[in-house]
Every structure is written in structure tokens, then in C-alpha cells.
Image: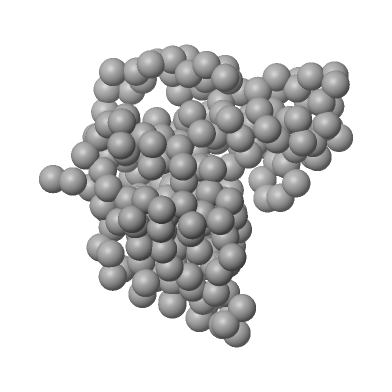
Length: 221
């Protein structure tokens, strides 16, 4: 049976593009993006969805007086599409525990750092300020605590002496595009699940596959 995927966005939609391409190619098997929902009416990602013939909807957070009210409206919109998976792809809103609990185990996010390092915003600036040798991206299950859910896959990106925020961000984003479809493929196939607050594996991939050195990502069965 084809899995139904709803993608939540706020910006230009580059991770959405990688997900759509992976669905078309079969990298994410038997999966259809059934709706793209943004909290920002002007998000370019909505244009990508429309061009692909996918319902593109807006639930503008500015129309609601509280995060609770916004999340309730967003949940109602999502549930109309009966998703098997909800993917946050550059969705820049912190979600309430009630919302997260509703989609527990099928709500994923990609974050531009090697979590648990640098949760929240401005991760590239933090990495440069701290002088780390490695930065990167993480795909994780979403839990009530911000950017603290169990990790599915990470990609490490070397920090170069010549890097500024933009150059580092560009390479990290490329890594995101590679690992997010892989994480979704594992979830769709049932190879990875969420239980008892942890990532659970059936036939776990090798560590080298789960922690890729960008820009290369090892193939996995």
C-alpha cells in the first residue's frame, strides 16, 4: 500500500525538492507526497508543490493568538490527508507537546547540526564561533523537547579554515538533501521505528551508513 506523506514547510523548499525526487525515483519506495502545508503564504515551497500537482496549503500562524490555536488548526488540515508520515522540511515553528504527541513516531525533522550540538537557530554561526572541526546535519524523530528527539541518520561536514556562514550552510544543506530521503526510506520500509523514546532498528544499517561523510552517502540495502 502506498504511504501518504505530508510535508510542512516555511521557506524555499530545497528539502521538499529532494523528497519529491526521491519519491519519483523510488529511493523512498511506495510513497506519495499528498499535501504540502506552509505557515507562510509566500513560501516558495508552495510553488514547487503546485508545479508538481500536489495540494499546496497555508495555515498562517499570524492568524492565531497562540501556538496552541495554530497547532490545532494545522493538525486539522494535516488530518484531512490521513498521512502515514509528516515531514518537517524547513518548517520554522516550534510545535506544542499536544501536536507532537498526535504524530508520535511518524513526525520527522532535519536539523542543520550534529545534534545534540547546536539545537535551535543560527547553527552555522555557533559552529564557527566554537571552532569545531566537524559540523553537519541530523534527521530525527520529533519529540516535545526542541531538537532533542532520537536520531535516525547524520552527515558530517568538515569545517574549513576559509568557511563563513554561507559557505558552511551550503555544504550542510547538500548533506540534508542526501540524508533526509534515506531516513524517510528507512521509516517507510519499517526498518526504523520509534518506541519507548528511542530509535528502534530492524536489520540496523552499519554505522558508516548512518553517519555519512558528506557529500558522499554510502548506499544501503
